[in-house]
Length: 368
Image (cartoon, rainbow, N blue to C red):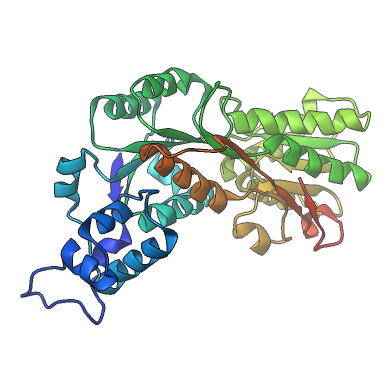
């Protein structure tokens, strides 16, 4: 499925100086006159050229907002061979994407930056690997987009990422990816997971379960590695019986927690690879008649708004999702405009947010 989300500037004509419906829309000449610059300068600003002084750029953009000016994107595309569209590719279906708050928050960050640059967002989602391959194929064949942001690509997407690179399509990945010279924005999942598990160890827990996501994503692998590193640092033996897979969903977290609670040695604490699975784990624990955190402590990863409202409030590794989206969008725009990208592989920090579900004093925040 593919959806076009057009930027808010298209609806920006509700200002005091907006012309009536019977009048022609404002033109680049009107913007130039109001900003007291040439039409060439306005054009450079709209194309995000680095040749315009910041003061002048601010004045032009102010005139654009005041007039509600919208460039004729079709004519502009024909003139400069650009579409003003950035594709955001997510290897998940609609139902999954809009049931997990991570994706709307990420899209919000991306679209905020695209709006500022008068760019449109083309959202491409897939329910299967076949659909995913078709999306990559369309990106390679068509000229409908100027660049692409690939969200949480799987390891076997590497061949398509390389083909996009050979096709010279500006491309940025969401999530660290094991590919030389790949442009990506992610966060330190490994250290974030390690800090969460170490916190549980410092609270006295030795039997710590782990509900993982899938291992075809680098985030799933990194969080599992972080879990094992924390155990090793504190001389605790890794036990595969304490690890089960929850496939990133609430339902998966519920089933995985039921599996852990039915084992002969029940863990005294559980770390989940995302907060959706933590919600499912909490439900399963309560149904078993156990109290959180008295009988079992639970820590998640993600920190969507839901985490602070469930009972008990969830201790979480906070991931900077919105910033991840804005940073990726800024990077892909620079690549599209052939501007220098000083840091092509950005790793953002996580934070451990302490709440009631782990049994520790609330409010403490540790860098991860």
